[in-house]
Image 1 (tube, one colour):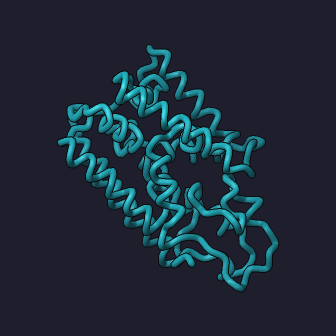
Image 2 (spheres, helix red, strand yellow):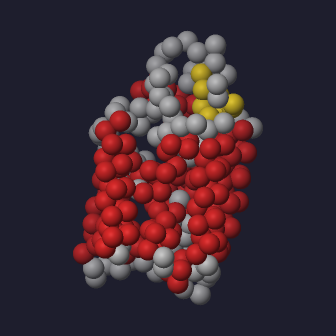
Length: 257
């Protein structure tokens, strides 16, 4: 379904504009899950139409040195990926939340009414993803193997249903109905780079003295990052915690301590 005549740069431009809009919504206190929904839908549509901005696959192509698949010079692609890591140091993982099509399609699937699994623990997925990241680097740099193609990320968005890999990623997407963002949390190589940056973000969700310790945010958070001791590296800024908080001003997005 990907339309090759549309330049990949269109996805990158959308990524910048969407990032700026979402960061402003959070900064101004206007972010809601309802306002985020259009971004999720547009991001998924761009994934199928342009296959951009699918940041983990762009990182895959950079590591493989495949400028043709990137649709841009290699230095420009590297600069773009580094720019969003720098933005994560300031604003957190906005790019993962609603902009990247791979994350957006899982976020939408998680809206399916089904019993959710594995909502409290955030350390185990991080450890698994770190191991996968090492495999990703070894496969790409040492063996020139496109790991994300084997998993079916490009096949899924290209609707290449004739291949087995399409159904591998389709299974991951379907799993997203009960397990929050399994690809993002257990596999995504770009997420492995964004998480450490987001854990030190200048702007982040934080509790204020107005917090009544009702723990509603902790129960609503699908990654366990609403815990007071969490470093927020796995916070996808989905807005579930702020949505259920019963006290105005108890949980805000602003400068972290």
